[in-house]
Length: 154
Image (cartoon, rainbow, N blue to C red; front, side):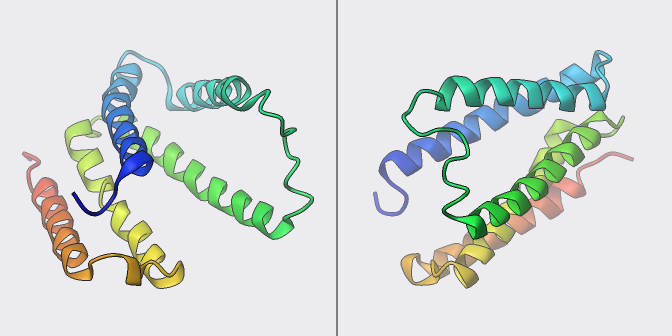
């Protein structure tokens, strides 16, 4: 099997499984009455705890790389801001009456096209992948999102 292999494949599959399980749980949580604001705060508290548990004690003090790479730190701040806005928007979307997980996440999954295009154009990845397969996959994702958008019963 060519393409994505080894640890990268397993990590990507693990993320897909976790997001796949987590998204319906977000919807169930907000349907039971948890406000989107409270859910977002719970997420950040758990994020801090997980960071301390998973990354603590690895020999590198917290924030030790920032002084050596201020440009990287600035980019990390922008990336985190964008990803957090994405997360907040997702929770708010799932909190709406028509925020169906089955539709919402199928549409948001097309975000991988944007990430992939940035990788191709600005991170030098275009020479490392089969562009024909990439274009076919992109067309399938876009057509799938279009079909999902039109699947809502009015």
